[in-house]
Every structure is written in structure tokens, then in C-alpha cells.
Image 1 (cartoon, rainbow, N blue to C red):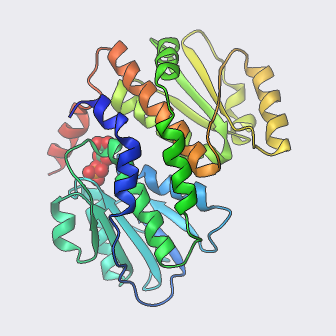
Image 2: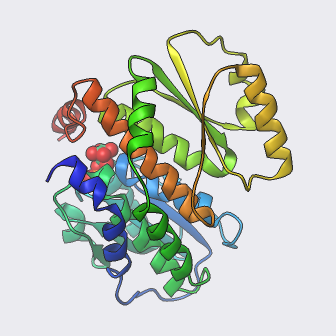
Length: 310
Ligand code: PA5
């Protein structure tokens, strides 16, 4: 499948992903959530954390390492997410979670994970993990909904699909042209922490370039001092619904850092806006890959590293 087909199919992948979770077999109360995943499989955890920040009464931690935090016990719900099912760090974290008798649900398309974990959601395979975000994020949301840890999200999910179906890639093409031969610097407000990080990692993996991502207010206390030059190109992602303090601070930041590409997220509700921004960023990174004469589907160095670690 070509990258354009995968990107175009994203709204349908969401519809499909929502239906992948059947019954959720978890016993007893959940006192915290750990998401063990890395790279393209890890970003869904960050998004979940940002999106549910104002609703979920228990903490979510995203764990990108071989080992897991000490607090994990039988009351921890652990999502082990690896698209390939073979990622070393994630498999090692899975084993630790299992030894601590945590309530584990894996999300994978294949590999060792589907062999060793009894409780898993099987997602369609055959695309690069970072482009499988719909399959890796939405099942976690549905599990939490089925466990009644969060309210029903069907309306929010519909709003995501609506805004993505209306998306026109021309904006992404133009932005990719402004970023060509530059180091993209992606800024947004704290609610979009996972989103800007996703932009950065998509530039790294798809476009094969360095990128910087940071959020307001944090960057106003450090990175704002860093000297910008013509090698950098700033993209500021904004939300009309940001709080008055954040709006004021974003305008002040903008007046200090100088010329930027300003983008307002579209859609209704935080989830739709987050996914609108993700979708735009994914397209930009792929167009930039084409300008850079790189294949967004191939990640030779990551593959080489994984072979060395075998
Ligand atoms: O997008 C990618 O291919 C990578 O970032 C992978 O997601 C990462 O290497 C982890 O692999 P997996 O998602 O199969 O666990």
C-alpha cells in the first residue's frame, strides 16, 4: 500500500479500530494505568493521557523502557502496545508487568506479544507502526469506556471522523514547502504536548530530518532564550478554545519569537482537534519526505538497530 492510501484511509481506520475491542476481561478495581510502548506505538499513550487529563480520576503513565515503575501491582491496568509485537523494550516491560500480576491488555498486529499475552486486541497488520495510530489509540479508549473508567466517547469519536473526512491536504503541501531545508520547530499549548511530539517524531521518521517540539507555557521559561536563525522554521499550532491566560501568553510569545507559521486546529472538541492536528502533521511530514527525496515508509536505521539488538 502507498503512503497516500494509508493516510487517506485514516478516518475509516478509526471506524474499524473502534469495533476491534470485544469483551474486556479484567477483574477488580483499577487504581492506575501504565502504557508500555515506544516510538510509533507509544504516541497513542501520550495522546490518551492529554485527552483524558480533565476526566480520568486515576493517573496514566507512559513507559518507554525495558523496565516499569515500582508502583505497578495487581491493581494497575497495563496496556502493552507494540504494532509489530516484537519490540524488545516493550516485551521486557510486558514480562515485568506480568510478574507483578498487573491486569494486562496487549494491542498488537502480530509477533511475540500475541503469542505470550493471553489478553490482547489484534489489529490489522501490514503498515508502518506510526501510520497505525488509529488501531493503536482507539482500542485503548474503548477499553477504558467499557471498564466505565471514562464516559462514553462515541460522540467525540464521530467528531474526529467528521473533521478528518473534510480535511484537504493542500495546507499540508504548502507548509511542507515552507519547511523544506529547515529545522521544523513545532509549538502549541500544553494540551497539545503529545501532538507536537508526534509532529517531531513524524519529521524524524518520515521526512528523515531533525525537528524540535515544545509547549507553552514551559518553553517560555527556557527555549524562548535560544537564538533562532534562518535554519529554523516555526509552526505554531493554536486552539481558539485555549484559556484566556494561554491565549495572552501565546500572543506574547509570538511577538517575541518573530515570524511563524500559525495554524488553528479545526474540529469540535479536544479529541477532534488533536487528531486534526495529527493528521495535518502526518501529511506535512510525508510531503516533506517527498521534497527531501526520502521514502516515508522506510526506516532503515531503526531496522538496522533492531537487527543489532536481536
Ligand atoms: O514507527 C515506527 O516504525 C517505530 O517508531 C516503531 O513504532 C517502534 O520502533 C516500535 O516498534 P513497534 O511499534 O512495532 O513496537
